[in-house]
Length: 317
Ligand SMILES: NC(=O)c1ccc[n+]([C@@H]2O[C@H](COP(=O)([O-])OP(=O)(O)OC[C@H]3O[C@@H](n4cnc5c(N)ncnc54)[C@H](OP(=O)(O)O)[C@@H]3O)[C@@H](O)[C@H]2O)c1
Image 1: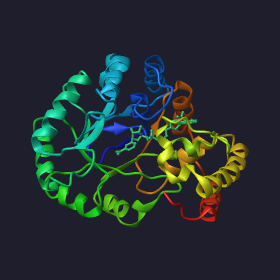
Image 2 (image 1 turned 30 degrees about the vertical axis):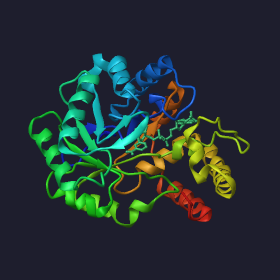
Image 3 (image 1 turned 90 degrees about the vertical axis):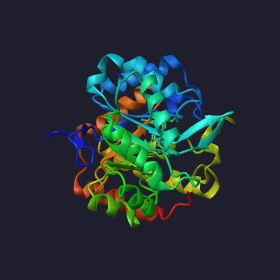
Image 4 (image 1 turned 60 degrees about the vertical axis):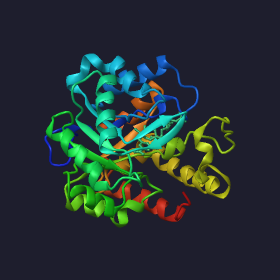
């Protein structure tokens, strides 16, 4: 059976895991080099991944989009590229601007950086409190009609915003945060996406690396490591997460997979989840993660994992 899945009700086919291109931008991840980033992108493609997730604001100067063009420009026709507009940097601070003019400008600039004439999927990166959702949606509809983007997505939206946007422009993909321990979309947005044939492409499947199970209990974060600001990497939450990973490690070893593989595979087997966006900055990380395309967890394995998640209890994100 083909592992490929469609974006919404389009004919565009993607692997159920994508290379998440935030870490290679080097903004919050540490020890990122251009050489390793180019090698990671190539390793993703060579491992069978065809879907690359980036954004206008991944890198202060759009480095992530430029790296994709440099590493994989000669494979363009075999790639499905998703990028996002609506957030940019000014003086190294993120600025939200989802006005129609800005969205159209960012789309054109993204196409230039990616050295292409269209992207398969273009997202609104997040809501802009200053601009009505319907106005931003109008700009996306224009880009769709012009053929610059082949399908439309939104990210970090609540249910009401999804409905408002969809009333103006058809949505093919939704990009929220989701992983074994952070599952709030299941309450409302996931059922809405299933009902409306909207693909759900989830970010943080490994909870920024925590659920790969490779950070030791006594790990000291470098001062510039952006993960420090999240409660899940501290104190009681950190200890509970490490206890959970110790239990998961036993199952993963028994099944001859790594913890990261079990976590990602569990994610893409959840009803309504189309794709896990797996960030990586080293070739070996994406190679390990790409192996999940080639195996499935059985219902009893999923059940065993679900028991551990239940024991872990609700997380303070
Ligand atoms: N729409 C949005 O607002 C939004 C927000 C966030 C992310 N995203 C998208 O989602 C993607 C995923 O998010 P993310 O990159 O922040 O988080 P993630 O995929 O949960 O974690 C990525 C980090 O996990 C570690 N890692 C990955 N594979 C590993 C492996 N096999 N073994 C050990 N460590 C491994 C690496 O960290 P270290 O090597 O540093 O430990 C890597 O930088 C992003 O790249 C981006 O495309 C979108």
